Length: 271
Image: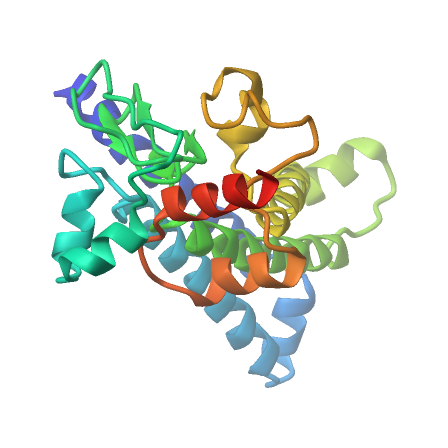
């Protein structure tokens, strides 16, 4: 039973949620700006901070439990059929003259669309695979990547705000021993929030950069081993359409992308 709880990610999600609310409770109970605002009857900022924390938790569970883009069918042609396109449209979307051949996954035996990868932890192939995140106990892929970045933004806002609130509650004492006893819980909260803030800043910066060039973490780290990239130049990315277009497509276009078509067009332009 315990092994199954670890496998489903229950303990990771429960620990994250518990830690979030313990830190929030410490910030509300100690003599911080939140407590002072409450005593003065100014509830706007405490309520806003509480709502930001709730929003971060909701985004966490949404990204953690969302389908990251599991490959459910054997070929990319089935995606086109799901979209109810004609044979002529299908030929346009999946060029038969493309030099890249789809590979069959050696684990689940499905034919992988371009940019898909099998995740050993999830035991599934993921479309536009980015990475498997142990923090959310889920893969980050085509369907939840944008929401993962949005979650990081909301989480960073909550963390930086919590950092400011925790610092406002640190009080002076006559001795170091008394100072640690008075501020012990706040210092612990400050340490947790500080570490998570650094991690989220690094993660958010890396993902925004990769999104701006239309590249995934897996493609960036394993470029030399990926069949459709290893023959490209060191700085060449067949999926890059420019920063503005990449950001617009990532955050605003919610659809399954036929990466084979984009790759084929790029190959024709180079030829």
